[in-house]
Length: 530
Image 1: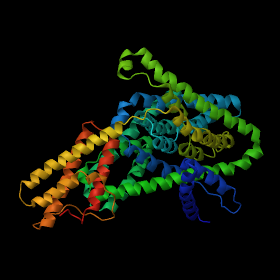
Image 2 (image 1 turned 90 degrees about the vertical axis):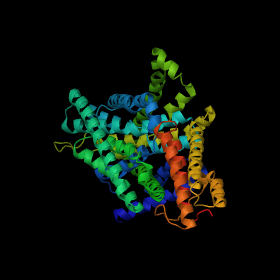
Image 3 (image 1 turned 60 degrees about the horizontal axis):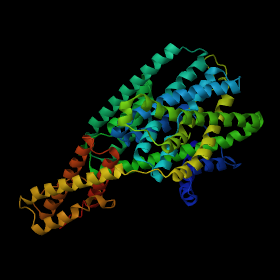
Image 4 (image 1 turned 120 degrees about the vertical axis):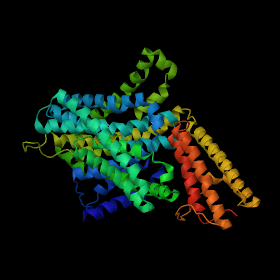
């Protein structure tokens, strides 16, 4: 069966699992992993061929870009310290801990290969974790920290992974070189990503067709990644930086139709890619079962359990001192940011599931070293990595939600409060603009009254597939009303954008209100109130 048909079949099967996951109330990603395992047991199902580098390039950039472009820069900046401690410090500590345990447990895994394994299993996965915590309504700050961690820990893990693979392939390692290379790769990736994001923001207004803009948006993460890699910088960090910059594209440079269509395109693309990733995880785990049996199921099972325990324990043991020690030392920090609840820290420590990142890095481990010899202990690194994915998905994936419900953390309604504030500001701006339009005398009083009554409902309408080509001007009453409605929407958008830019509200509340305004515009293009 051709590779393309296999991939289409996997995406189709993964999509069919959504109602199954909903029916049994399990995370979709876990259902897709089990779907892949079941497919691997079918005798007639073909082996899925992998090009590790191509797999990495196709899967990682779009998922990271979407996550970065929908994250809240304000909230991420406010929580920079805990995010750094998790996304950078914890990843490095986990790499070292896993390497030490793996080498001690299996001495035939050399130190370089042990560090490769550590880098592979160090980063937690964004898709599974956020899918669970968002549905259960955790406190906003906890969600922000988890999302910020899973977005940025990829950079630390991937850069460390490259260095460890290089050391294993060359047979030598220099700490001074690694530190310098880490800084250079990080700065280079950040610079390339900012440049690509800036270019995207400048070029985007030149396109008036929504399909062209959607295509340009889809190509941006690949451009950032490939360009950064071409210069020897971090492609992962470049994608994150490009996504963060491009998310701040001024609203006036794109139409509502374009924003709605682009979001639909991205939602579809990320769902398909994520579904494919987790189905492939299941396939790979299923394919490795015979290898477990051939190499000694007991020994490999013990290694998987020990490494999984190391990963989980390192995270839990790191989080508590990382949260408490700085506050015990600094009175200013303690006054500004009081001690967090131990329940919140337990959930934060338990929400370290492994998934797509680990899969992609494991598949990308080279077959041979620079000398042409087989990559050391590759036959152990891969099954252990896939085993860690399975253990964390099963143990943490199925227990995280009951744990969250048991602790019943106060959700907090920060986003909801900000959203209400933004909606009120949008309504007031529209009313003010309507008063200005009414003063011109071009629209009858009864039509103005109907428009005024509709303002409060403007952000609560559903999407219609009606297209939009922009505002209209003319001498007819219908055109005057349509133009007035568009001015009201623009006034509302500008008011909400000012709140976001002034950091009165976060990106989550901003996107909710703007999305509703866009949907309302698309719905009412050919239905002016009269």
